[in-house]
Amino acid sequence: MTTQILPCPPFQHLLVPLDGSQLAEAVLPIAGWLAAICRARITLLHVLEHDAPETVHGEQHLGEADEANVYLAGVVARLAAGGTPVEAHVHPNQEHDVARAIVEHAQELHADVIALTTHGSGGLRGFLFGSIAQQVLSASVTPVLVARPEVKLAHSGPLLVALDGGREAEQALPAALMLALASGVPLQLLRVVRTTGVERGPAAAVTTFMPSASAALLDIEEQEAGAYLASLAARLPAGVTVRTTVRRGEPADEIVRVARQTACRMLLATTHGKAGLESVFAGSVIPRVLPRLAAPLLLTRLPER
Image 1 (spheres, helix red, strand yellow):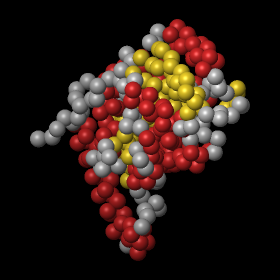
Image 2 (spheres, one colour):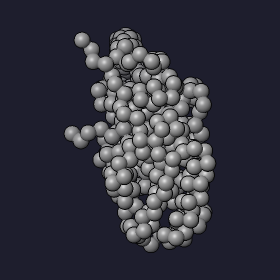
Image 3 (cartoon, helix red, strand yellow):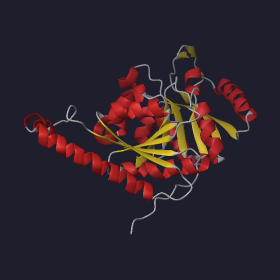
Image 4 (cartoon, one colour):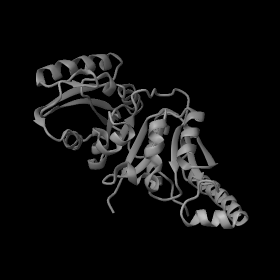
């Protein structure tokens, strides 16, 4: 007897760290959508940074508690006008480790999600290995929502869950299911089967010397992937619309392609926190998806092994 997949409890509290820049504020509409469908509240957080630069992303940096309070009060007023329950908190002590302070506040305030804009000045490498977002992801047990500044929330697409066939990736499903039930947005489950042109390691040698056998094995893998997604869909409760998609190709490319073709509202995945994004999807897929993803990404932290 198969076990039904159940939704996680609705998010009740979202923590949105802001540094005073318009780039950081780009995540607010996405956080607002999550708060609206979950009937959650939002806390805006500013952490004073020790020896902070005078400017951040070309704008004046918030270096004093008083100016940070004034700034956050303005953002609160804008969000509250739209009906979102929102409050603000300024951490008055100057911190050397801003990311750690964000994670600690998330735990103290019992936040369900930390929502951040990814705007590392070092591009993809700067985001993955040096930015506040990556440091938060590595240290936090709280799910992290990340979005690039130019990403806009789609209004018609599904919630896309990219799966690799393993049980760890399936742990993104409870949050996806909860959001689907709360919003009425359909789920789309995606599994990518590598083609002969993108195999790696020993599989690449088989492809080279036994192309016919390799093609047959890939056909079988594609069929198994379809059956796997169908079995997951059958375990979802009534009331959620679910679609399944199997693609062949390079996983990162196909995830991006499907996300664009469906205009997905959000991509959901899992991660081992200490290894950060490098541990998602066997080490390399999500880091190559994110710079091209026209949707926010919600990462669920896996338990420590």
